[in-house]
Image (cartoon, rainbow, N blue to C red; front, side, top):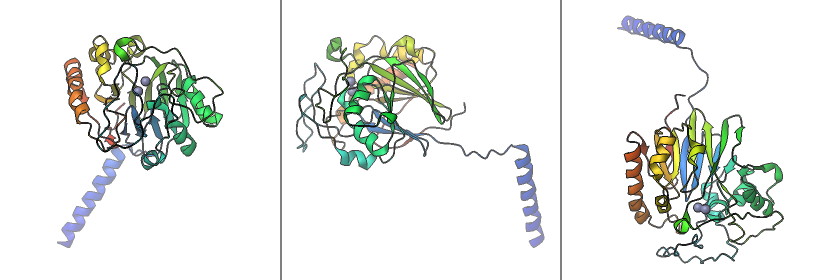
Length: 322
Ligand SMILES: [Zn+2]
Ligand SMILES: [Zn+2]
């Protein structure tokens, strides 16, 4: 009995060494990249060490709607103040801090308060580098975010950061107000905090970001539009696609997008929720509406998986083969 156990052990040890010799052993553990939806157009993308945020907006103030839209109905039980454009909104630092403890980079797609309101607080707290257009960086300067934390981009840059690289992609804002929305204004230099919502809302231009991270290519949009020629030929495996109703103002929104990106493996809708309601409020109406987006993607790209994200639920990406 003992003899056969020993013999078995020997076989096992031999097999272990044989397979170790046959397969080069890498000292690097496979790295898992995880996404978390922060609501609105907000995302956390991390490998467990480096934390990249996109448009983190967790305050979800009961604020003014974009042009052409009636105010959202107040969520039941929501007694928070209603802010107008000329008001100074108080960010909800408690809720932001409860979900964001670390950030190395914050990528901002454009300077609207539902993308930028919480970024000064997050940048000052975490010392993250804030990447965005000039308008965004001028909001940071107003809140005394140190200059060395600011990287101003135009669109077109392709920057190397070591653990990841970042292609900054010129893009377009959602076609709000039945295509009548247009903004050529930007937040000027020299403002001093606190800023009104109006001062935090000169769009300044819109960007998308392609994040290359541990073999993944994650393409993040901050709204419901894109410039087809700027994304043509990119091959992201994950795309965060603006999915609110204004996408229907765009010709063949999902079809052109899927074809330009060569039918990505995973699409996750973003900027589809009612961002004036607190996290605890029901988003069932928005989730129901989202089904038409899911159908569009499936029709345009049948092999693409679509995940409807839950707030703060980790979405682990499969280890990239590339
Ligand atoms: Zn916007
Ligand atoms: Zn927005």
